[in-house]
Length: 428
Figure 1 (cartoon, helix red, strand yellow):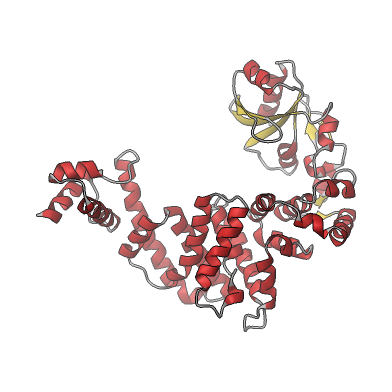
Figure 2 (tube, helix red, strand yellow; figure 1 turned 180 degrees about the vertical axis):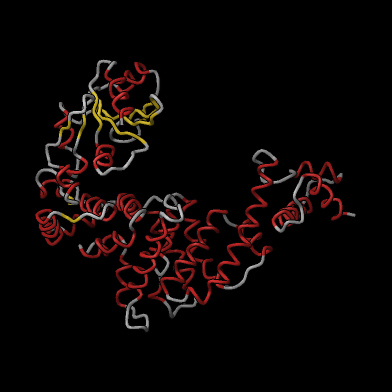
């Protein structure tokens, strides 16, 4: 913590006052070590601050330009004050737990009782609830996101004000741009997906951002429940495994849980998979999710059920060449979660374990190529193949490269020399 104050003092040597604020202070109060510290700086010219401290770059893409860099071995992001004073800046923040500042001398500024709320595990909006919600209704989702992630309760007055607003101003929620919904939803499901969706459901928000999920409440599963219950159960299992398996940053893993049953309403259609793919793609595109993540979600949803049957190393090799490696690893992990949530994990445990082992061996061999070639994905390029075999450009070169990939993935080739020998054997 001392290093944080050294950073503050270093910035204040430029003549600008600085404070620790936002997520940094909230995490410190919760006993969590922040990896990056957030600062508020009393300066209208972040470029001048950057020049004075000799580090950092100014990112002016968002509504609030940020100076980002590394100082005294600590990553930081610094924003200019919103308002004339630090109190004005804190008043612009949504939640009391985020509206706390710490001075360089260690003094704490807490005008909204954020430390009290952290101790009592309560989420409370700063200032006038109604005014804040009316100014930006998406604050409701942000409030639920924090409540889910930190397992806090909504303050009773805030809850009453939010429910009243939703009863009267549903049209305001419908007017929120899809990309803003998406940004908050993805943040909300990263750590506590089941809890977050349950809270959204409790506040009747699902029809506003994912109507097809709401529709699943009306589809019985044949076991006394609904398909919606299955979604919650798989999200619960995913939630339990996120930290354990260190895949918390893979948004596709959780999004697959959220969207995996979308389209079940059309079970009578033979083209359900295409319908589901279209719904997933349309939603995630509107939510401004990166295309690589969308592709990974589709790969998981469409392929995870295949892991319930034995798959050879050769099959996995083809899959690795057709999909991203991470997507396959996550799809296998997703298959385990789905089996647990549906209650048939023990039946498929051995198959899943064997498939995990086979995939691990294939990935290890491809990783060995990268280690031996300083990052290249193959032992040889197409040009090198043509030179070695005295060939001209053409379809046959591509076929040989694909065959070499398979030979590497299945363990038949494990060095540059072995690759050359394998290629020669193919044209002998």
